[in-house]
Length: 161
Image (cartoon, rainbow, N blue to C red; front, side, top):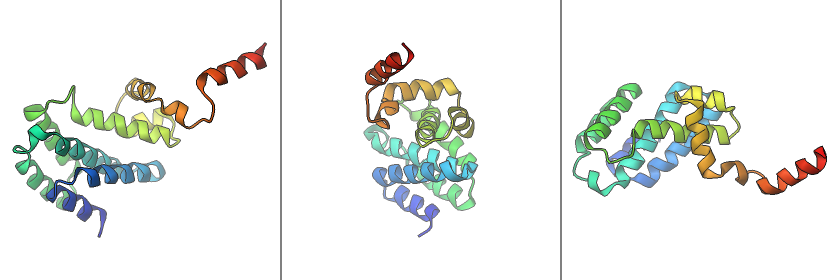
């Protein structure tokens, strides 16, 4: 099954977990090829994961899903992102903007996989400071290193003194 069909299947089944996994797959792929369509698919699948995870949306997203399937068939990813943005404006209880949050999350994942912060921000179309703020709150910077920030600081102090 191709990836568009997998997204459509997950949308039809309101499978939030599958959409989250697909978002991770697209984000990982975007690290290598950095294509706009792949990034857009990561943003779309991440956003639908969040929409399906909110109980108060259960009766509201039928039109969004049917429109999404249509736009996926046409590969109108920008149009679908706009539809999600409009849905969020109308029904959203998210703090801020769902699409922007998705962009920041995808950007931080790109950054955690080795892309520069500026490349990550540019690819997802957010400010560097948005990604840095998010990453700073996640402690991702500590998870990829075997020693803590405090221990690294002590080592640096010993070396420099």
